[in-house]
Length: 387
Image (cartoon, rainbow, N blue to C red; front, side, top):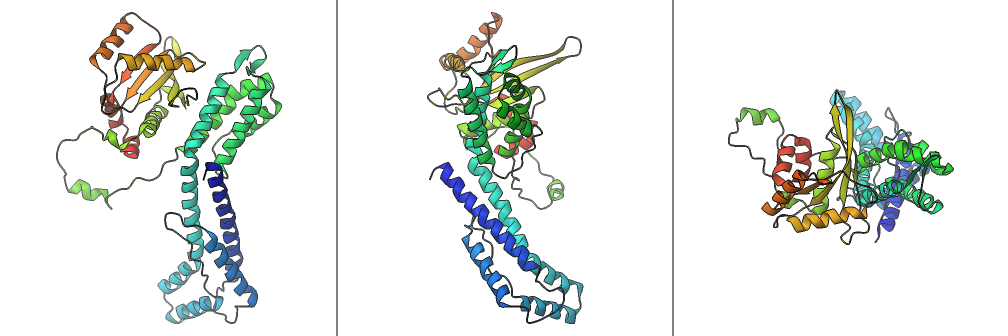
């Protein structure tokens, strides 16, 4: 089953879930607030059967299902009558909780459904966002604004990608303030519209989409009360060494992306897809910001090339290949950061130092595993999300 077919199954599930929620909203109107009997009419019985059919139509999510059986109205009345006879607050509270149980189950299912759908589209959403990045970066500045090199064909491609993004995010709300502006400028498709898309609309929408894709999930914590850990007075040395073998190439790239996104000295962080590269590897581009109170703020276009290598050090040959890969991009980068979960050979270190002494461009920087471990030591939230 491909992603489009999988999304169809999620859409069908969403439709049935909406049906189930609507049936529950109808049924709860008939639930008595005080004991009353003979309320279960044929219409009510049919409503319960319809609810059961809708609940049974929902596939499980990690084993979780909604109970298809609704309690009969006379049974609710009996529970209320029993609570009145006991006349204790806890008894009335138990009845109320029982009455709300279907709504709680529907809410839990909706929560699990949303998380599952987000995981389903995550990879493709990243790819399409990168494709839009590349398309917009290929546009050319003109006196009237910006123009695509392929004219209307690129406008058609942009519309198709934005439509696919909407399909991928579905009903999920994104915190983008310029979403309507983006749609409007795509519709008019003039040079000044493309200028506004590149400089204002897309950066705003893109950030919201990435936030949606990378929306975190709670970490598993093995204690109930953190004070218990404090009082146990644990000892021993604290290591910053990380289990890099837990990550694959894609997760490693995402880790570096998250570090940059959460570092103030980097702006416009983009996870790029090298569609022409044989391995479809991904780089990360960004704007590096230098703030000088005297000379003003300087911004440099930089790229990060990530290699998740655990058993082999990166040498000069591999770095030269990486620099050649930069020619796949239509833009020029002032600085290149080679980031690895392993290390660099001594020849590579000497080569970089000599290149720096000769002031060659682009400047090349190395981030080995030890540097990443140092960076992550002061970013516990990111560290705990990946290790």
